[in-house]
Length: 285
Image (cartoon, rainbow, N blue to C red; front, side, top):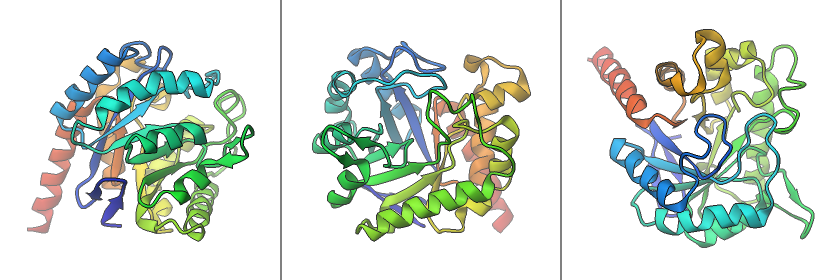
């Protein structure tokens, strides 16, 4: 799929896009608290753009293993002051949330993309609304549907068993096709296998090695390997020392067909992808 349609921008996926992570949280697994204030978060946004980020992904609730849920009011209190300024920075803005009310507020403020670990399945029981309804009612916003086994409180206590590539592929294909059936153009949708969300280390690497199988349904794929514990398991590095491993994983993901990589370390990732791009160009000559 050559483009990703979002609220304000038709993103060209001929070149892999780097999505920079901006965690407006005190408790994210690798950088919690570093950008928790509005001023610090916006400064980080500007730094990531200067380093080459094509998209910014703002998140105000941690979804690390064992994380406790945040109320909608708390999430909006953290998110909206940052989003209000971030939409003026000249790049597409993605919102990492699963709550329909947060999605609606963010889209109303000009956000471009909804990035949902629950793949729009989470039901807001207060008003009976799902994220799928919010996205389907919007004329253009982009959406990323992620595969998660269980929930953030339980996903690593009881991870998936056996060969997971086919079940992940089928889940994502069904979630995307269900959204298309509600009138959402396929060009608005990308999929994410959910590295680390209810999978073992071996299963995560099987998703990378066989990532081409996930491309069969025809939707653009986003890969989120940045600083994940599986990288620590094979390198022995702590979360804040996984820059090299993260850049390598992102590069392998792009080599295997990912069109968007979600990363903390934009500078290193951009450099790595430029080397890959130059190599691929030389192979065509």
